[in-house]
Amino acid sequence: MQRFQDRVAVITGAAGGIGRATALRLSEEGATVIAVDLDEEGGGSVAEATGGAFIRADVTDEAAVEALFARVRGEYGSVDAAFNNAGISPPDDDSILTTSLDTWRRVQEVNLTSVYLCCKYALPHMRAQGKGAIVNTASFVATMGAATSQVSYTASKGGVLALSRELGVQFAREGIRVNALSPGPVDTPLLRELFAKDPERAARRLVHVPLGRFAEATEIAAAVAFLASDDASFVTASNFLVDGGISGA
Ligand code: NAI
Image (cartoon, rainbow, N blue to C red; front, side, top):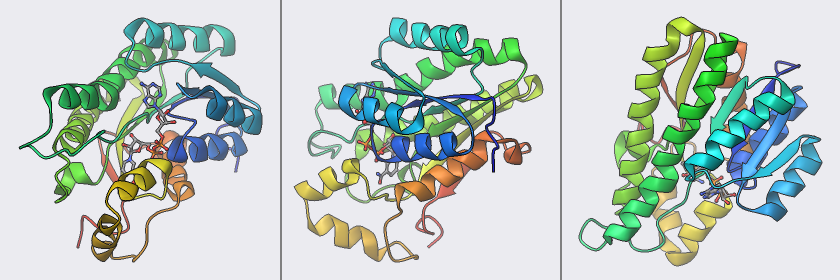
């Protein structure tokens, strides 16, 4: 399938698990992929694998995000798809009783403010083109809660859901679709880091996944490819859950 032939896709957090897998998937389907991350080594290796470009940018930096989308449109001609996916897990215990205000703010900044900025600066280009697709990475925890004291993380992803729904409704009549993608637990560096801090957490989490395993990043990438493609032409403002059934159990 070449659903992204002659299309340009910007992917943030592209050096990591889900972002990298999506970069590879979209490029296999014909996209010119612009990988964005702070991690130069990982980002460079993605660009090499896709034949696209790597742009090092901090997605919490407004000037950098504005310049990023302007540069992509200027150099590559369009911004057809934006996968706003960069994110972090909280650096320490994330219980409401103990999370510091600094941690709370940092998690909102990287997980939610970055999505606001990427949408803010991708949308003018998409409006000028009269088309575009945005996919924002939320999480199953925004739908059901984590039961593992992830208060700032869960709240940030709830914000991503609400923001995506709002924009999906607002820009639908301009040919621009905006969806939130909510993965269940995915075997990536982010999840491995969490489980390294608390090994029993992996087993506790697994019990609740009806499919009985964690997702591979490629399984999330397949869903992003669907949402960003014309196959999803009637899908907007959705919370698209790819969670192994965890939120339905
Ligand atoms: P990852 O840690 O492998 O990748 C995240 C990437 O974001 C990294 O390459 C990192 O360098 C980049 N990044 C972080 N802060 C950045 C910044 N300020 N500017 C630019 N890049 C930045 O994580 P993973 O698992 O691939 O996560 C991707 C997204 O999926 C995140 O938003 C995460 O919250 C979400 N998610 C992950 C789940 C999982 O189980 N792995 C489950 C549900 C959601």
